[in-house]
Amino acid sequence: MTEQRVLVVDDEPIVREVLGRYLEREGFEVGTAADGEEAIERFADAPPDLVVLDLMMPKLDGAGVLSWIRRRARTPVIMLTARGEETDRVVGLEMGADDYVTKPFSPREVIARVRAVLRRSEGGGAADGRVRHGDLEIDPWARRATIRGAALDLTPKEFDLLHHFASNPGVVFSRTELLEDLWDFAFDGDPSTVTVHVRRLREKIEDDPSRPVHLVTVWGVGYRFDP
Image (cartoon, rainbow, N blue to C red; front, side, top):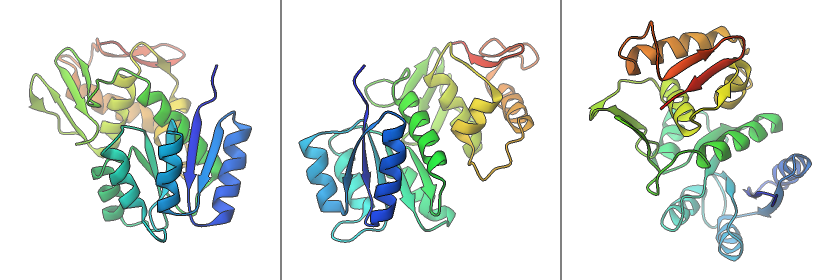
């Protein structure tokens, strides 16, 4: 199997070195760039499977690089930012980033997010990025989900959970795996939070939440999405 290639773009040498080492240890091929202009050159020369992209950089910032990528490809992008304000994270997602990590971060967290985003990108997405299953349609770029044309009122985490399930139909996820994929590692990892979110999600997508037919429990293992 061909190694998946990750391009790490950050003006801090220690970030490039540490992330590169961890990614290579996990079996990824790694390329690096120290600024936005170099990132574009490396992307054009050898398009990666995923980009880890710092927001604040010299010459051309991460927003400019992301805009350049989105005009040409749907390559998954995880943004790195030292700024923790919600507005910065929302702007990155609205511009087309698939996920974000706030500095300082755990390399283990970044690896988990890389794997989660790659799994989603390999799931049941259409050419325009939307995920469709019958009456359900999910637009990850607009972060909007509808059933029979009616918009679902989802919290950000509910949307992430629904998109994760719908992008991987038929795959059983344990609560621990869902915590690792969708919650920060700073979070104290109580599996019951997954149970609560699944219950709330069922209330919004199932005709009878007490007898779910789409988001089903696999007893003793976890949950599975059946289209």
